[in-house]
Length: 162
Image (cartoon, rainbow, N blue to C red):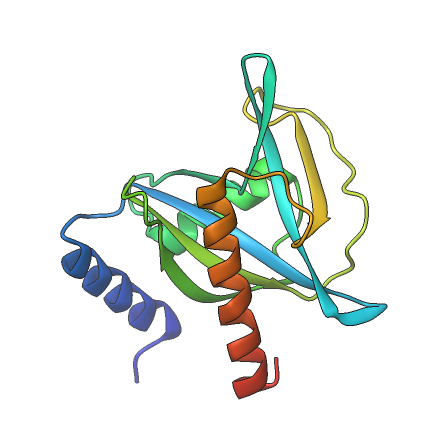
């Protein structure tokens, strides 16, 4: 019987063939239900210093040797948010429509959504926070990805009772 990792690697390889290129980066869009109102979702975003303006996005980065999209996305999530992955369940892979070579995965968070205690230990990220999915300050392309992931989340929730 194939392991979940083996199956996931086959899906990733198949997606690479379908899109005609090998993924160069892995990113993650993490969604969590509001414990006080299960119809509301939160997502974890980070800001990376870019000149004078703060640009919010999702944790992401390059794929290192011996990594796949999922392992790169999980590593970047840990590095950029300083959060444990023990409350994270990876459920879906999304192709970034901008064709940057980055694939995003959907992470479902079942831990507490609270202020993230942030310790700056690198110069990649200067802020990390949970925000309501309807109130994000993201580039339109990223908002479109978030909408697609939210739709997938509700499909999974209705189908699998996650």
